[in-house]
Each structure stands twice: as C-alpha cells, then as structure tokens.
Image (cartoon, rainbow, N blue to C red; front, side, top):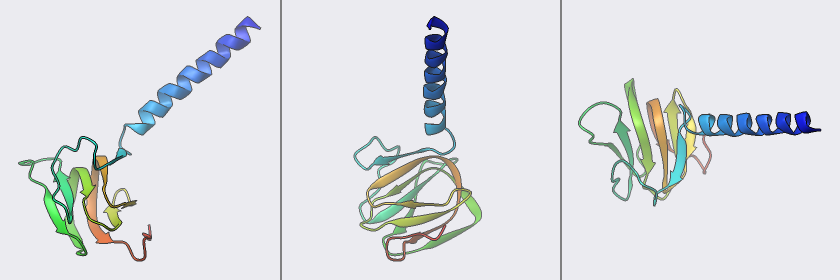
Length: 120
C-alpha cells in the first residue's frame, strides 16, 4: 500500500512539472488585455513586438492584413481590436479581441478572421 501511494505521488509531481513546462515554453501563453503586457498596444491595432530591435511594436490597423517576408520573429502579439485575428507562421492560431499571445514565434501574416474562424 505504501509503495503504491509513493508511485501515485511521483506521477502527480511529474504530471504537474510537465504541465508547467508545456504551458510556458515555445507554445507561449494567452492572457487577457488587462494582464501585464510587455508593450502598450493602442486600441484599434494588432501589435507585434519584435524579439530583436528597439522594442517598438509593428502595428496593424483593425481590419487590415499584413504579410512579412522574411518572417518577423516576435516575442508577443497583442490584439487590441474588436475582432479576432488570424496569426500565421511557425505557429498558426486565432487571437481573440483583447488577448495577448506571448512566446517566441515567427510570424508571416496577420489578418482579420473570416466570420470569426481561422483556416489553420
């Protein structure tokens, strides 16, 4: 009985460690706009914070699309618009209005979603 409880505890600890590691690695995390963003993104824009450079975000006005060739390496993407945006690159994901995605990724495009959905 005692060794069975030890095994269960070990599994729980390993599972918790994996959950923390997976939640904070290259996949990044999504948070609400009220969270601590690294950059202040003006209302009505999608802001892409380049990983390297001056720390000045690349702005995309609400309703507009943008393509990047070569890909833009970013540390954070913030959507301060009223619509969901589709972010394309090495990670493809929808970014809802008022949300921020943190974590290093290469972005090749951002565009407003068609009817609230992104074709990934």
